[in-house]
Length: 175
Image: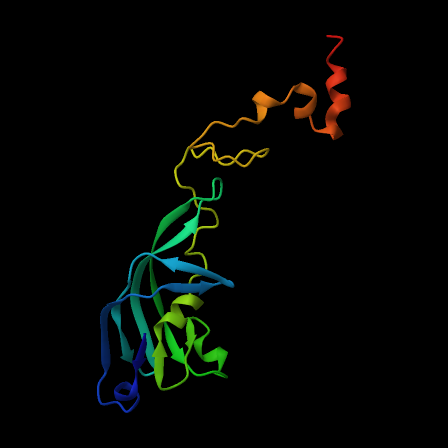
């Protein structure tokens, strides 16, 4: 998803409209590759301003993550805006103190790279397949949403108690 900025840089035009959709298999965030189940949709523009090139786009796509409790795959819709000045590496940070600065190579804009850089706080920390997800059994690993756990049926009380807490069981015997 690379966009040439030659016309903007040479000031042949004042803005470049971006309105497209592209299918991409995966996106990388924090050394995790997330599978995408929908195309990345981008709508917005890159404008020439007196301070430089300004990017203002809306992004939406759906990625696949795992449920935090049962590890089933869950589709997570992501929708957000990216706004900031396009700058080359080694830019003067004081000049863009109140605005976001997005680093690019100077000739073309790699939108997938920018999306990967701006995913902070957009991907939820934990995802659930449903609000009342029961998760996995800690003993046998069975998905409790699908099947009942057979751990308790085959074990007696002595086997279920964590040995570190076995002495605590005796405290309540005299009551």
